[in-house]
Amino acid sequence: MLSFLDMVNHYLGYINVSVKLKNRIYTVLGLLGDFYLFYIAVRYLQNGHPFWGLLILGVAIVLLYFAFLNIVYYFTKKKAPFDISPKIEKLLGTKPKEAETEQPRRHSLGRNIPANGYFDQKKILPGKLRATPVQQQNIQNLATQLQQNRLLQLDYSGLGDREIMEQVQKDGKPVYATGPGILIPYFEMQNEDGRLVVYAGLNQADKQAVGTVSTVGLQNVNDVRDQFKLYLANATLVGGPFKVVGRTTLIEQDNDFAVAVQLAYKHQDEGAPAATSQPMGTTRRQRYDQQATSTATSATDDEPMTRRSRYHH
Image (cartoon, rainbow, N blue to C red):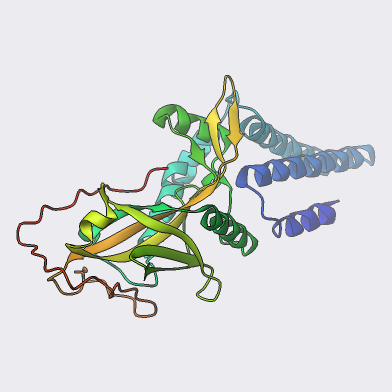
């Protein structure tokens, strides 16, 4: 019996499922193992071994209590009565769940620098893409490829329904399966007939056009190109399925994926975009060198472009 449970647990690691579903499966497997301990305890008692029978029976009862806590937590939206988990957590000195999950997330974001370089965050603005039906389909195909290569997991950042419900009620915004989004492995921006076309893909060989830059910050891209040079700082896959609160429960709705971009800028008469002390990547640096030179521009009295902190779905 225990060998069977161990085998199931081993092969379950190869399946790409959400954290909550996996915990539910583990809870069921734990119950099966606990029932097996009850069976062993009864057999010991029947065969005249009260010490081992009572010892195993006591362990099985304790494990049954924790299995009950898991059932209430992962299968319902209620709080289990007589829950001693906080006391055990305090006794063992473990970190709260928020601290355990938030700290690695900040750490990973800090190291997730695009391969085309690190730009000064003070000179980066969010941009918007305008995609044709063909380009929109390219984005959906890219999302499928990322999932097939296990670079994208639609697991709502590991949040359970209870946590998603609390977040939706607090922020009043839907929670997306992609979480904050995923940085696309390869992206570049090209000047085609006066349009800034963004390409993205798993690599340079598989890149496809995913849209044309329409706005930078709050301004139309054509209104700022005479004064500023633009560089593609990063491209992120966002959108996809999301959950909202229905009458009583969460409702999951399908939605198309999208590409969110951020662009670095500099004045026409400046040098390269300023960066902090962190090194610039040299493996794939995108430069926009095909600016119109026939029109003389002056950047001495330019107003700074409006910045937004991040892209909102």
